[in-house]
Amino acid sequence: MIDLKNAPLEKRSNKEFVLLAVESDGFELKYASDKLKADKEVVLKAVANWSESLEYASDALKADKEVILKAIENDGFGGVENFAANELREDEDILAALREAYGDEDWSFEKITIAMRKAYANANKRNRICGINN
Image (tube, rainbow, N blue to C red; front, top):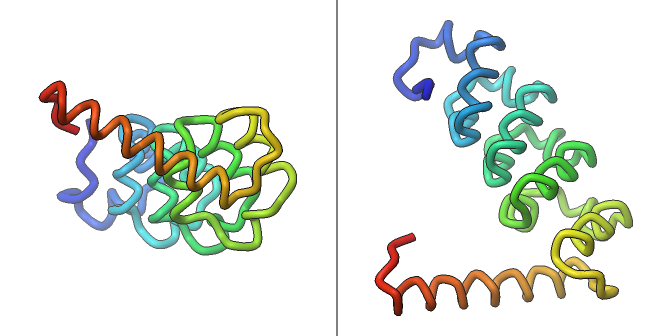
């Protein structure tokens, strides 16, 4: 795994180096240069690895439908729920992808949010009962 946090600025600004880092750990986007946080290819690689890395993307890419769809395709809803631009929350393509990933009911973004929070809470409760740390 490449550690961008401790890498020199020249490495955190090097697209090829950052692509390798976010491909193995999307969280590393946090330490990329602002320019690369606004680079669609870099952000797509990061959210393909970990949807929550959307937090560190530029505002423009948080509003990019392709980026949001890639985050949903990957592992879900967390990054989308918390960091996607508001204007995409009722987008039909986004809602269709969420419905496909989490059930085929005619849900709104808010209903999907509630369902995912309940599922996450239940999983955490089961893990605590079984002695599994998250």
